[in-house]
Length: 81
Image 1 (tube, one colour):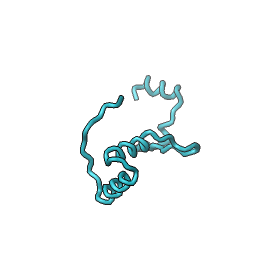
Image 2 (image 1 turned 60 degrees about the vertical axis):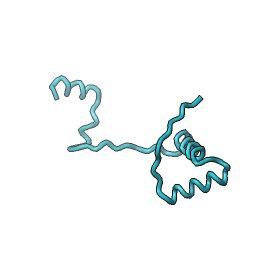
Image 3 (image 1 turned 60 degrees about the horizontal axis):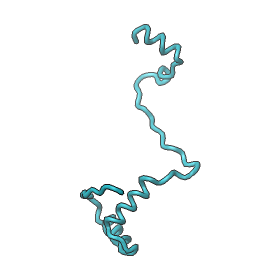
Image 4 (image 1 turned 120 degrees about the vertical axis):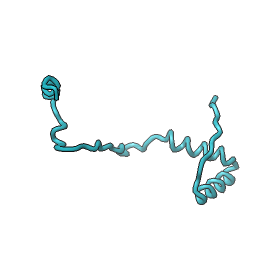
């Protein structure tokens, strides 16, 4: 059983009107349609072969200096850097 929570969503007028129209076409309430659409978006499995989005960490200085071997990291730690 799912817990339900009432909330307020702020939608652009065109999105609201299209959602309300689609819900009526499907014989659903706007609330049911919104829940269904959010579930589909949130729990959808990515298509096979779809690349995962990458995250690039912002860095300063020489990016080559960020790639150290475990031995180099131990040495830097021991030197207090």
